[in-house]
Image (cartoon, rainbow, N blue to C red; front, side):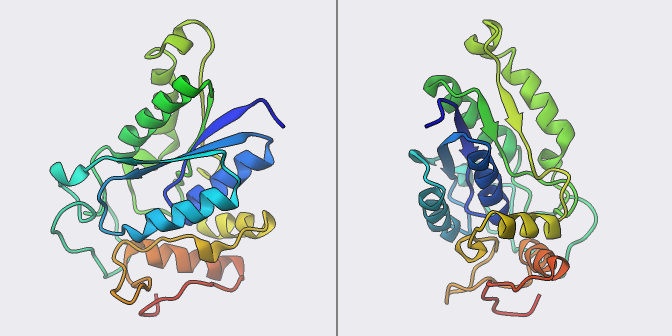
Length: 227
């Protein structure tokens, strides 16, 4: 058993699933952190639980944090989720400072548990234009982590891994297949139907379907409408 422990931010989506599996492949023991921020697509929390079990996480924390109190996003307020396709600019599904908040929580868990590695499944090629999915953001957060913590100041610093940041969605789907993951266990849709289907029309559904098409692999996702 490896002595190395990594904290993995696990949303329940395909990207975080693959990021966690890559951490495991590199020999890390896993502590998974999922944030229940009262998101519209709460079904992803169940997906996160399934994935944590699949990856053999020795600890899985589902942390409540009600970002509806802030609002400002179609995922946390009564704002319609766009269904017209992936557009230029930052869409209303952007949750203000979400990854900054989530990485801060992961950093706290890492320092408290003795982990010095954090994995996040951000992607800056096929994504919805969120500023906190870019490599520049993660680089700066890693610098912050190492000046804002006792461990960092004492020379026992942190690394924030973003193994998917330069991959296309097709590349991420191919990695999932290479790792032997059941992509059908993951959840992407921002606006699930009452029947428990992916809507097929939100940005996240369209990007997910695009990834499987580009990879030339069968898409196990059940969509209410064809992306």
